[in-house]
Every structure is written in C-alpha cells, then in structure tokens.
Amino acid sequence: MGLVVDVSARRQGLGSKLVDVAEHWARAQKLSSVTVRSNAARDQSRPFYESIGYSRSKTQHVYRKMIGISRQA
Image 1 (cartoon, rainbow, N blue to C red):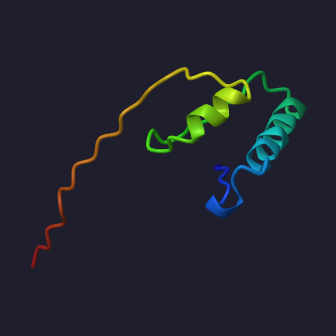
Image 2 (image 1 turned 135 degrees about the vertical axis):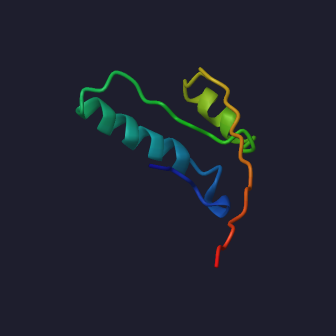
Image 3 (image 1 turned 90 degrees about the horizontal axis):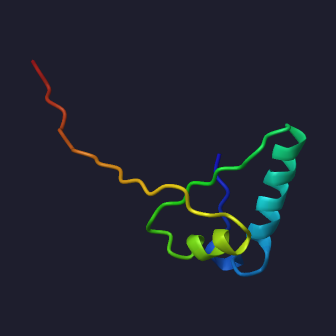
C-alpha cells in the first residue's frame, strides 16, 4: 500500500493526516508498529517522517540488470 500526496497539495498537513489515519487503523488492528518505506530519491520524505516521530531503521539498495528478451523461431 502506498500513501502519496500530490506535489500541488504538499505542505498543507495532508501527509500527516494520512499517516494519522494509517496509525489509527494499525492500533485498531492491535499492531505494535508501523513501517514506512520511502525511496531514497524522495529527499523531502525523510525530514517529514522524522518530524512525526519515525526513525530510520534500515538503508537498502535495489539492483536491476536488464537482460533483454530473446525470440526463438
């Protein structure tokens, strides 16, 4: 699942409200934590999540190799 606020609507508190709703749902499910994944390229997400109490617990790299598709006759 993903939570994304459109660029034109950012800095208006919508992200905090989305996270609040997700956390409320998690508590209702009796979950003990919420994990958020954010692409390293999203520079603005790190300060946002840290400002609402989240801490970074892991850094990850994703590797991809394009191998093409071979058509056999």
